[in-house]
Length: 243
Image (cartoon, rainbow, N blue to C red; front, side):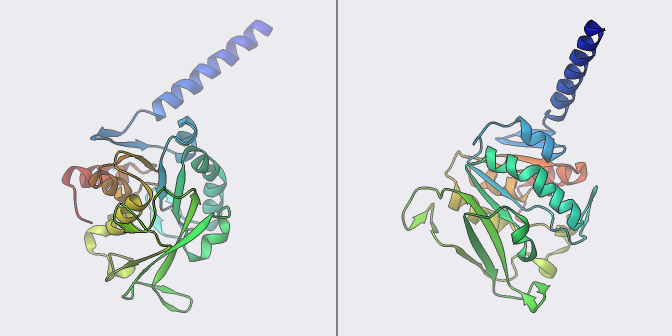
């Protein structure tokens, strides 16, 4: 019996390893950019401690956005944070996460909070037009005094115009329900990394973080559970689109 149990345990172990290996095969890998089509919770297990210089990510908000293959409920967001955020903090030297105003306290306490704002109306909030959003920051700031890579060291980032936010997005952006504007991703990558550094986005969506990283000479890894969104990201990377 002991021999049979040992054999079964060994067989299950091999099966688990094979599944992990299957999940970890890149869906896309070119010019320093890698995309994994799979579950972030499982794929994050495969990375080393502080392997990434920056995790820049925009997780779901739990407000019923119509994502492909994901139900955007508050309960699912809480599960997502609980199952992935410790792994994100472990694998990255610095983390910048778009939490949304109402979700700040659902995340672990941040080391600092950055605000980004824009000078036109873009989305609606409880008090009318919403013109700012928080970015939760974890880890130690990149070295440098006054500015980093031409970006002033400040906890406030101001964007001009609507910057493709909220209802000011153009139609092509609506292939994904909640894409972040390319300019804010470029600012954050320039601010918190140096050329050649490695960036990860475990909720890569339509690939804006990856596109920004590529434009700035950084390597990047994206994880995305939706194959449709992976394909949009690959198309954008191949065309180097400006959105």
